[in-house]
Length: 306
Ligand SMILES: Cc1cc2nc3c(=O)[nH]c(=O)nc-3n(C[C@H](O)[C@H](O)[C@H](O)COP(=O)(O)OP(=O)(O)OC[C@H]3O[C@@H](n4cnc5c(N)ncnc54)[C@H](O)[C@@H]3O)c2cc1C
Image (cartoon, rainbow, N blue to C red; front, side, top):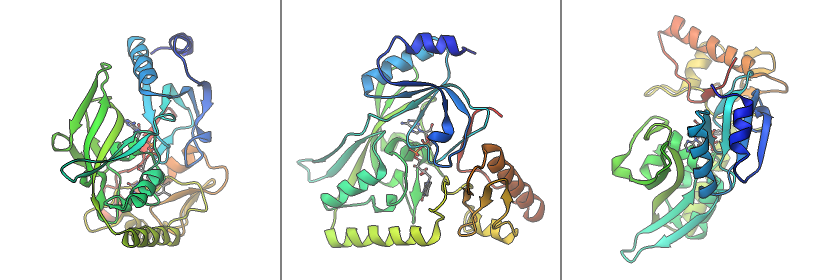
């Protein structure tokens, strides 16, 4: 695998802000994670294309990320380059002559901004994203969902940068989605997504957004760093309920705790490490298997080295 010098040499050829040996705990919503060899603030598609070309040629690992609200980086850090889609934030609304309403949003744009724009333009369909703290790219890659709807229900096309450095468009009907995953060409980076929405009524959209916000504030432990749901729900059986039935609500490992408010959340009460969180995850999985014969799969993405 390429070492730090090779990474510095490759990244030195391109413009843009690079943080070397960067603690990922400063960037993940859980506030845990060791150091990445480098973290690049992506400014635009051209810079991203050039950097990905350089990294591929140098056989250097890289990972595109959005807002890091669904990632656990192990304490040993990430060997390679994290590509933070910081600058790809444009969001545009267009109405086509056929009457269709579309919003195109770049990968780094915040979902909250996207929801805000739908409200301004009286469009309905994306209210379910209210309160999901991720980026458009992360939500599309994860097929994020809530309250019975997922990204797959509203996306009409994706623009991707392939591992070979080609920009391609994929229509919704050519993309498969599973629970919390879009099935895309290997190592493709999402550049932007287009969403087909319906004209709605401003008051009703506002009401729905407000209702979801209230539900989230009531049910989620937003007062502590967290990464949303840790485990995937089973059909008809929320993972949180399984964890509660196992008696693990409130269980601690170091400063990591199975939330007292919502058992499918693990919170960082102060100085938890990734190892603390991963220990709790393993404990929950082992008990679910042993006591209920259930395989609980993680929804969060776990990367890096021990
Ligand atoms: C309080 C809270 C509530 C949450 N509620 C929900 C919820 O209701 N529903 C839900 O589904 N999730 C929820 N989440 C989890 C998370 O916010 C979503 O999954 C979100 O969509 C992740 O976006 P992100 O930008 O943070 O992705 P990241 O965490 O940065 O990345 C997640 C994955 O996507 C990949 N990725 C990111 N950007 C790109 C890109 N441009 N191209 C290719 N791959 C990319 C990364 O490599 C990684 O594998 C919640 C999280 C928190 C903290």
